[in-house]
Length: 163
Length: 327
Image (cartoon, rainbow over all chains, first blue to last red):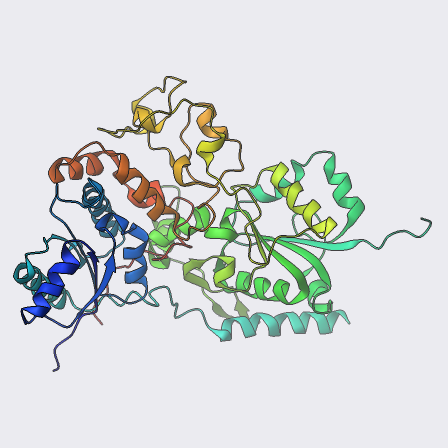
């Protein structure tokens, strides 16, 4: 059996974490290719809807990475990230998504090694959970053209009687 | 002006909804006479004795405007949505249910099995020893009987057919309905696909006093009596006004009851609840992860119900994922 390679979306802040991933690259540190990194100006830019949309479009896990608390380039926005993360955790749990599919990591520009390890760890944790498969979770086995055709046929019959 | 102007044809239909939208139309009061002056109402099951087959016999696009309220939960509702789409020039998703799912869409937090269990078996007033449930097909000696299929997930109208305009609200306020109808009569319609309504939030219409928001603890409505002057959210009462489209005149917060978000997300926002979460997170007054988690856990025991009371079906995730049963 081939191993499951989860699709991970990783939002990284421009000033610390993205630079850390850059550092990991220049230092030739190997980390999992499962993470698709999206650079944002600040982890505080990550609206909860980005995360939810990622799941809805087929991501198996979402990582948010930003500067350490107190180090934010925009003074205190990463504290908002911290709270949004808590809020999202609370919400996705109720929606039936495992908590481990969302992770917040603080990595400074110097922590390339740490960021690479965190990505590997996250990929490993999501791999254990298996695919999320959210896309099409609303598809219905009942939603069949057959049922609609039956209604149409019934109505056509009624109309014939009328005429 | 001897010749009488030809009237436009108006239809109104309901799917998975409560019927409040129909009543909201009557809240137009005497203006309903103006509606009658401009429109021939050709199909409105609540008020008129017109049948589905009358609609089926119409030419495509014969109805000028169709106000469709309610979400799509059964195959019959989907059939009607498709039929009315075909027969209408302009299809308006009328009210929160067809716009974003509303309370019927909140049932997406469970599924068909759970709904049937509650409705046909578990309620205290139900006696159903034979465990009878509605079937799509039932064979009887006289022939086969059909019932519409009940879908596992409620869909909004625009997840089913193409929608031209949206009129938000649970129900839409009479003034907004009138605005929309006059826009249609005068032909001054906004671009296709627009939500007909304000482009600001309930806070803009709310008279309560606002300063900087800092929240240490959320209160449920029964835990606190609002002081009547300060912003409800600043008092710790979870009010959705910050992320909800204006148009209602801030009716609820004005009388000390928090906004529950019935007008849906503001212009340019897809996911109402996500916007609420983003906004609320900004005002929680703590920088300590454990304290933050506690404030949220204790203050908001039901995030779906608090943030997605009206918008679950239209949100990114659309429904709760039920535990997969091993086959």
